[in-house]
Image (cartoon, rainbow, N blue to C red; front, side):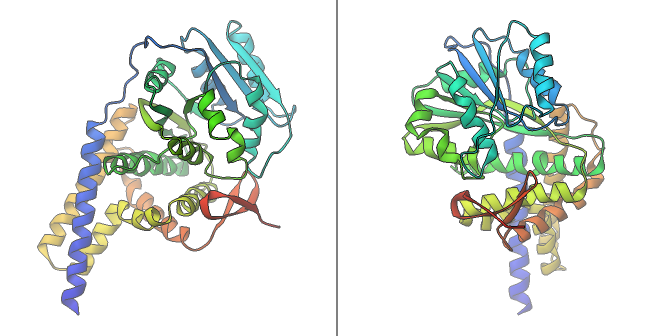
Length: 379
């Protein structure tokens, strides 16, 4: 019996070491850049659904307004005229008078996903044949639009999305939440794509032609779904078109909130992934490779092979963290002590993802059904 347990432990440490090494190498090879202006530069409408004055919202919106793109329309949308984001949009109009800015105030709900309802209300004001949907908390660098449009140019490409990094505040849990995105989610997407998975789609950027959007049934297809970004890209692939990653990486702002708020958000992401990719979610635990490798080393103790493989997994984990810090221009080593807390919490959230379907989103409680559909929960 002990031999079987030791063998299982050795396999776990090997998986952890292999995954961490592959993730680190793929991250090192990932070339993020904003290419120079493409020859195809169609008129573009960017849809920005807003809800409240989120942290650094003004700077996030200004980063888009600073793009040097020849024919750009930006449509903002809120549900209520009293939303504090309206004042920020008005300030943006004053700062960038030459930019074509539209603001839609419309409280109509078209389904349980209120962000999708906001987008549905905004879409009729979009004037151009290429549409980019982008979350409100996204900060972009110069050349962002050109990079995205260049990736959309081939006729067999139906949608373009982007990877992103979390930009933390100064609080502890904001920094821990950033490690979720930067150290785990980002490299996990690279590993999945290296294995042939093309299902990734992120609300930080989804660019597609208006004709493609109409062909999938419009934005109504996401009105009752939590995984709206994933679903749009899935519908695009069903048309026989590709969904591709742009080489540009954007940033998302992470609020200085408490542990409970961040865990609630991450658990919502976990349970959403489980409903849209149940088999993939089951194997996703192996991507939490450091706890997996350490567990394997414990089961195989005192095997020197298991200890060596677990050490390799640790080196890979630290390497990924330092590489992401370097790319973000952040101070190296500052958040290294948070790795045990981050990875332990991540493992607990993955396990909790199996234990229910309830999620919290913008003050409401829902049950996530198969495929990411939402059902409101009473009370």
